[in-house]
Image (cartoon, rainbow over all chains, first blue to last red; front, top):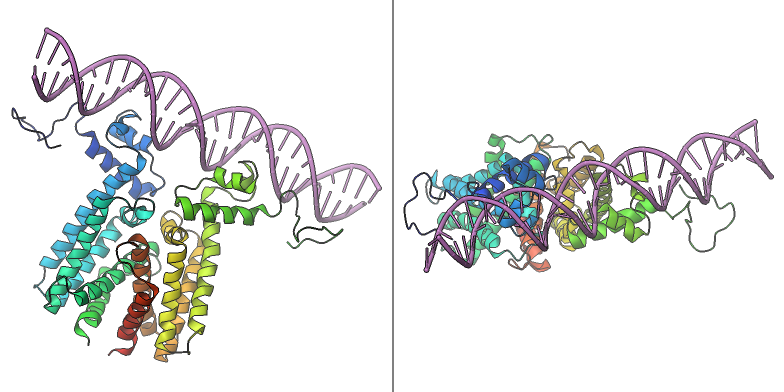
Length: 208
Length: 208
DNA sequence: TGACGAAAGTTAGCACTGCTTACATATATT
DNA sequence: AATATATGTAAGCAGTGCTAACTTTCGTCA
C-alpha cells in the first residue's frame, strides 16, 4: 500500500490520482455525518456529495457502506487509545490518579463525540469478524490493564489485574454511555466524573 | 379496546377490524427483525410483509419508522424492569444478593436480546424528546436504587443511595455492553457474572 | 334499520438510497 | 510510446420511507 518513492513528490506524501485522497476525506465526512445526524442518518450518497464526487466513487475505496463505517471506527479507536495513554502519563506511574485519568479520557471522548462513540460499540453487532477493530478495542483495554498493573505492582497478564481492570472498564464504559444518553438528567460535570472515578478506583484497587 | 362480543367470533379473542391488532403484531415483527438483522437491518416494508399487510399499512398506526422502534423499546423497557424486580424479590430484602440479582437480571436481558438492548440505549441519540421512554428508563434505575436503599437502610432519595446506585448501574450497564460486544473473547458465564456482581456490590455497599 | 363518519386497509407513485455495470480518464510501469 | 491499473463518471436497478387518493369495514346514532 505505502507507495515506493521512486521519484520524490513535493507537496504531500500522497498527492494521489484524481481527487486528493478521497478515502480519508470520505471518512472525515462520514464522521461528521454520524455525529450530527446519528449513525443511521448517514448515507454514502451524502458523504460523496460532501466530498464533491459522484455517488459511485466511494465504492472504489470501500466495499460497501459498512466498510466506511468500520473505517471511521478504526480511526476513532486510534484517537481514543492515544487519549487514554495521554491521560495515564499525565500522572505518576502506578498512582490511582493515573487509573482515574485513563477513565476520564474515556468519558471525555464519549462526551465529545457521542455519535462516533456509540458507533464504535454498536457496530460490532453483525461485524464481529473484523479482527482489526477487535484488536484496537483490546489495545484500549490494554491501557487500562497496564495502569492497573502498575498500581498493583503485578504483571499485566496477571489474572487479578485483568479482573480488576475489566471491572473498572465496565464502570467507565457504562458511565460513558449513561452520561451521553441522559446528559440532561444526570448533569455530571468533569468534576463529578473525577470524584466517581477516584472513588471506584480506590474501591477496586486500594480496598481489601 | 377489548371488543364487545356482539355476535360471538369462534377462533380468537380479538378478531378486530380488518387484521387483528396490527400494531402489536408489527412491534413483535420489528423486535425479531432488530434481533436478527440488527437495528439498521430492519425495514418497515419487511415488517409489514411479515405481518401480511401492505407496506403502507404501518403508517396507519405509527407516524414514522422511528416511532415503531420507540414502540419496541417501550415494550422492552417494561420487560426489563419486571425482570429486575423479579431478581430483587428472589432474595432477602436488603441483602447484597438482592442487589446483585438485579444486576444479573439486567445482564441476562442484554445477553438474551442484544439487538433490542442496544436499541434501547442507542436510540436516545436523536429522540431525547421521548418522555415516556425516559420515564421507563428511570423506573429501571429506581429498581436498583430501591435495592441499594434497603441494603444501606436509608431512604431511596438519599444522595448517597443515589450515588452508589448510579455507580453500580454504570458497572452493570457497561458489563452488559461489553459482554455482548465481545461475547467470544471474554467468555463470561452466568457464574462469572455472579462473582463479578457480588464483588462489586460488596465493594460499593459493604466497604468503608 | 339504514345512513354516515371514522378507522384501517389498499394501490400507485415520488424521491431517495445502496450498489452494479459499463464507460472515460489519469497515472504508473515497462 | 504503449499498456495495464487505479480512479473517476453516468446510467440504471431494486428496495426503501413516506404520502395521496381510494375502498372497505366498523361503530354510532337518528
